[in-house]
Image (cartoon, rainbow, N blue to C red; front, side, top):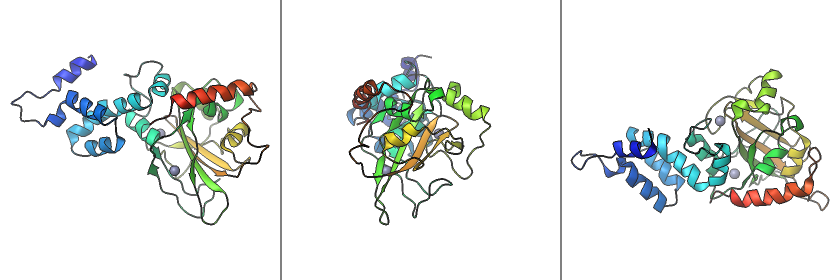
Length: 272
Ligand SMILES: [Zn+2]
Ligand SMILES: [Zn+2]
């Protein structure tokens, strides 16, 4: 059924007694006027069962396509009205929510860091490529800049980052995890969809370029990828020295182009 037809069938008749808030055309106009505010969407979806269903079927997708159009277009292969791995609500949360972190097997912290909404984030597929081992470079992965969380007891800040694969089910990264028979991480779940996750540290699939991209040292990071291709991770952000402040790519080469493309992508995929 086309989207227009579906919208029509959900419109309440004047004497139906239903709230105008259940009229999808009105809802779309309201959210457009408030620039798809995620806080209002969360509140709306929590009001009742019907609004929750409308949010899951329509509003989360519209929020993603309106706030990050180019990124969503790439993730959905140019068909932004289709379904997406893990659901549009999970992608919406990933775009606007830093998940915080706590100690994991390979990344020890003295305290738990809470998650929080972010006003805007910059997602880059150039950055994402730094997180892919050489043999998986054909995959498309977007990764955000790290969100900086200072700790009282260390000089280094904690950086928390997140990302998402396109069509993870068909990706080389997933095939590699399956081929290596990597087990799911115990006691860690995807903060965006709740699915089980693989530790890329355990899988030994973290390339050196990931640490360099984040501005940390080799081994100073850990990240996880869930069954649906959502990525979340943490790193130590060490102060940059002049020789570290660069953007080359040891494994992929072609460093100049990589930097330029990243800047263009970053601007286009800022979720403001
Ligand atoms: Zn944060
Ligand atoms: Zn997930």
